[in-house]
Structure formats: C-alpha cells, structure tokens
Amino acid sequence: DPATTLLDGNAVADRIRDGLESSVGTLREVGVTPTLALVSMTESGAARTYVSMKQQACDAVGIETEIHELDPDKPAATLFDRLADLNDDPGVHGVSVQSPLAEHVDPRAAARRIAPRKDVEATHPENLGRLQAGTLRYKPPTPAGIQRLLDAYGIDPAGKRAVVIGRSETVGRPTATLLSGRGPGGDATTTLCHSRTEDLAAVTRSAELLVAAAGQPGLVDGGMLSEGVVVVDVGINRVDAGDAAAGQVVGDVDFESARGKAAAITPVPGGVGPLTVEMLLYNAVDAAGRHSGVGVDL
Ligand code: NDP
Image (tube, rainbow, N blue to C red; front, side):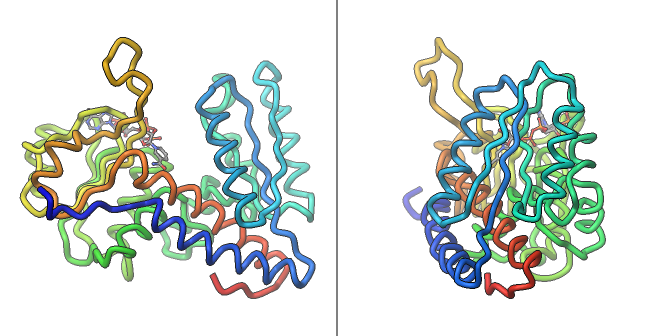
C-alpha cells in the first residue's frame, strides 16, 4: 500500500545524533570527556560487528570509547575483574558488555558486576527493578529506541492495544513494560507473547501496535495483521547461505505482505537498529553528565 508510512530509523537517528553532538560539546567545554567502555568476551562475529558499530557511532558524536576485547577462552573471572576495574575508573562513565558472551560466562552474573550508575545497557538487576518501579535511571536502548521512533512519527501508544512478541530481558519484556507504563510513550493495553503463546495470529490480529522481537524470520505476515496496524519489527536475522537472499538481513515480519495492512511499518534494516545504538550513546552522555554534576540538556 503506497499510503503506508515507512518508520525511517536512520532519519530519526540522524536528528538524535545532532542533539548528542551538541551535548557532548557542552560537556567537553567544561573538561568532561564522555567515555564509554565497550567490553566483549566472545567468538561471535555478530558481537564484533556490533562493537564496531557502537564505536563508530561514538566517534561520530565525540564520545570517547575504550575497547576491551577479552579472550573468550579465559575464565569468567577475567571479565568480572575487568568490570571491577572499570567501575573504579573515574574516567569511564558508561560500561557496555556486548552479548552474546562466551558460553561459559553467565550474562546475569556479568550484569550484576556492572556498577548500576555506569550500566548504560540497563541490564543490572537494580536498573531492571527501577524499570518496573518507574524510577528509571537508564532506559534499555532497544525499547527506548522503539519509543523514540514512535514519538518521532506522532504515534502515541496511549489507549491502544499493543502486542509484543518476545519476552527477553533486554528487548521484549522491557518493551512491554515501557508500553504499559504510565505516561508519555506508554499507557497502552499491552499483551506479551512468546513461544508458548497459543494461536499467535489471533492475538496479533487484535493489535493496533505490534512489536516483533522473536528472532524468527517471517514469523508475522500480513494475514496475521489487522488493517491500520503500526508494525515495529525489531528482528535482525541473517538469511542462510543457499537462499536467494543469502547474507541479507531480514526482520521477523514479512515486509511485503505486512505493508499491505499496516498504516506504518519499520524497514529492516534501517528501523529500530540505528535507534538502539543512538539510545546507548544517549545513556552514555547522560551518565557523563550525572557523574560530573554537569547538567546536559538531552
Ligand atoms: P531472544 O532469543 O533472547 O528472545 C526471543 C523471544 O522470542 C523469546 O522470548 C521467545 O520465546 C520468543 N519467540 C521465539 N520464537 C517464537 C515464536 N515462534 N512465537 C512467539 N515467540 C517466539 O532474542 P532477543 O530478544 O535478544 O532478540 C530478538 C530479536 O531482536 C533478534 O532477532 C535480535 O537479533 C533482534 N535484536 C534487535 C535489536 C535492534 O536494535 N533492532 C537489538 C537486540 C536484538 P521463549 O521465551 O518462550 O523462548
């Protein structure tokens, strides 16, 4: 449908980037260099790609990065010791631990070792609790990015029937929490679906706002949607070798059939992804401002 609005994450990310650049400038003028530590301990090529994307995005706005690439064959204590050092380092304002970690490292145990005030990915239990309590310090980047994207297009979730597919601690569940929370960007009547949901299509057809974050290409197609729905596709799935589209990245939603029903839809790539990165940077600048007692107008 040509009337379908494309929710252009790159365009919105560009505008956020401009704001961040000027906030970083304000901090630098008073001698504060916002600094983000990017920590990884993995063999995953995707993780390496994400770290370098984050690094480039930081470069673009003037945030300093420290890359800590740890040997995935070393014991978990190597990571935990490094996190302790970074917590104590006054020159580091934010710490991002890249997932996935090496298999023998428990991501929850790692999250517990990040000082909550430096936890710009919002994975520490204290920040997860604050999210529930509505006393947020840092919003988890992906859900925050989804809120920003909707806001940029004047889409208010308030009073709408929202359906989120996926209940991970970093994406699906916090997205449902924010959408169902009180106030701007929230107030939706929210349903959270997962792999044990029966008759997913019946639930998704009730959605006025659908967020797909399952990591399953083609999980949602146009037949599962109602006319006029807003579709946010968070999925990042690489198409297998052998397929005609091998190597391409696709979401969880079959874009072509979905756009026939949707009033607005994110492309993949170019939807939520760019905003996730910018919201991490936003948290890092916020952290630098808080640590140094300099008010930055974000
Ligand atoms: P996880 O694998 O941690 O969680 C996936 C969730 O989807 C689980 O809750 C799972 O249910 C649910 N699920 C899986 N299959 C189905 C199904 N057939 N029907 C209904 N629910 C299902 O993934 P993440 O949350 O970390 O990531 C989700 C996707 O988002 C991935 O593609 C990832 O690459 C992408 N992503 C994108 C980001 C961005 O910035 N755009 C950032 C982070 C992730 P159950 O709990 O029952 O197993």
